[in-house]
Image: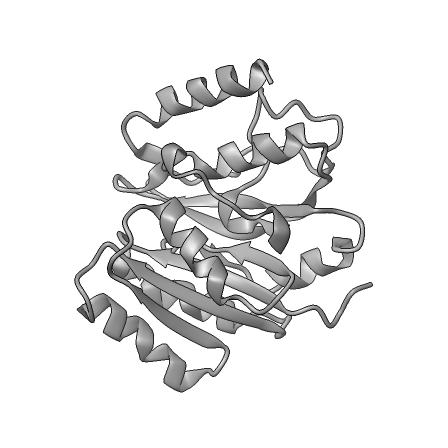
Amino acid sequence: MITDKKISILMPVYNGVEFLNDSIKTVIYQTYCSWELIIGVNGHEENSEVYIQAKKWEENDKRIKAIDLYTIKGKSNALNEMMKYIHTDWVSLLDVDDKWLPKKLESQIQYMSSYDIIGTKCKYFGDLNIVPSIPVGDLNIVDFLRVNPIINSSCLIKKELCYWDKQCDGVEDYDLWLKLWKQKKKFFNVDSIQVLHRIHKESAFNAKGNNLKVKDLIYKYSSV
């Protein structure tokens, strides 16, 4: 079992600022402590109140770094820029309006030697309170064109596989999973709920037009 691998956690922040502190706390409370958290504030003016709020967390924990990405627009561009600041071989994502349960990282590290992308189950909360049905265990036989099996805020992924297409903002995670699935990368989902995914009217889950983008992705990768 791998127990000493440091993990870089990327948290892009544009909308959902009101959830920032709660989300950060769920990283700090992880039972697996070898991590760095990079908070990238994008799409706001330079030295914004949002950035100042994020920056204060550096004083509380040296593992946390806030970056002022005031010239960057779009989630994919922000994530790709944040990758320049990481110091590890593994990357995890946490959307600012989501939360982790304390053993999230601990539940995944045992699979790092065998898989390229590792997710977990999740529970929705907020405007919708259900546990979505996703496949668990080894995902080798799962058809990713029929289901997106990796919850974005649950993913743990090898650094060299991380690149998000700005043309796919809103469904950039599914685009990446489909691309890596087509490349025969190894996926795994931990069979326990370790992520709380907030559903609210401004969340990406409810964004207008994303259903059409998903259809476009399926068409794109069906012909690859």
